[in-house]
Image (tube, rainbow, N blue to C red):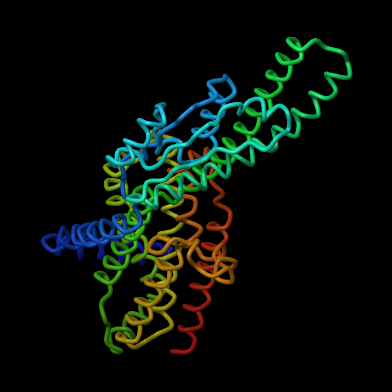
Length: 407
């Protein structure tokens, strides 16, 4: 009963303390947003790819068959460059003129009898004439065509086998050619589809760490952390030994004061975090539904409480104000760096990445990203809940030990 009474008393005292500083509180809340916003803008501009114009490619089709049209589709679909290239059919004379005028990066030639050579098992070549004024784009097209050639060789080997079996069955030339063409289509579209699946997986993984969305989530976590750290220290007041002894005579413990400070800081920081996230949610491409708000609120609460418990433990253990502030500041910076909010996790050594799942800040940011960027319909709260339980027990143990030592 006395514990709750003292807890409510200190909670009320901290709320009154914040009320008396209402003039400086808005600045305390707005400054981190401005600071993190400027830093995020610089980082996003560094990581964001530069928007380039389409790579213009000429196509000289001297064969003019349906098979070459399928190969053109393979060129467009077999690479992630599909959305960055534009293919224009033209004569070889026009292609040479376009290169001289620097209108295209290169042009590809489908030689005559391309289809016949493909079906007869002869080597097929697709000459590429590059633009000397655009060497980088020409090199990219060369790499792309090497990928297409590998697909063609794979399809050609299967087509030759089928063609030989069709001859053994005695099919006439027209029926056999139609059958072989159908198989060519099937094998070619199979290779296209196989690469498309891989491409979709790569795009999905990149979306989790896309510059704008990734650093918006990371920046929001940094802002929350700065708010918590600032409000916690705003409520911290140094007490003289005489005042501390008098409070101990009335049955007041450091644990009660720490819990009251944690409660007030947590409520205030979560309130402003919710308001800020409401405005930030419009920046994401996917719609944030009510269930997402609930899951994000739970993850944020677990993160904030665990961070506050860690600050309270250090405050209990370290008596010197300057040393305590230094330790808490270093802990805050380390937590943010290891969370991946500042530096993407992929840039860390594998040895550090292996232990990151045991770091509360990384686990919190990871689930925030999963919910917001990957449309997760669930979140695993167990690790954060266990960490909170362990930190609470540690704070109780440290506070009890400190009380016994002082007595």
